[in-house]
Length: 166
Image (cartoon, rainbow, N blue to C red; front, top):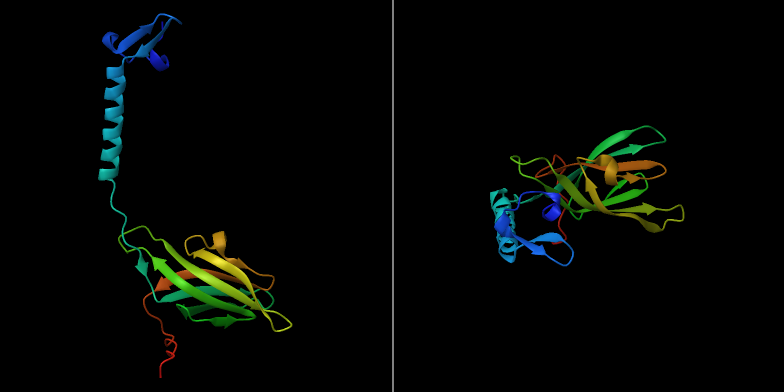
């Protein structure tokens, strides 16, 4: 005769025989002890796991872009909420996060990319997250240009944009 779940891990006093269908089931006390032990193990697992480190918000996003016609590759820095033009694309990062140096590298940015069409209209072609560690995951792939996030930085050699007050 097999015990509950096909395993022989239950003690005799932890089993109740169900006379109707000739099966053996765990007693309510055993089920209660098992549930308590499982709950305690889950709590210990979460208590032992390290707390998630705060992500660092950076004022500068570093991108790479390639012009597929000329083969020219360019690295360029963009401040948050600033729009820069790369070919016919206008790139605007909204937020750029990185992990602390003590953690596994994770760098991502929320980016909006518009294209200036031949009839001089602006058309949104990308809105979403780009990930520096996986550039192929959410890079912008355009017929002529590819753009991807390289890094998020605290400063840049490029001077910051002038504020509107002045």
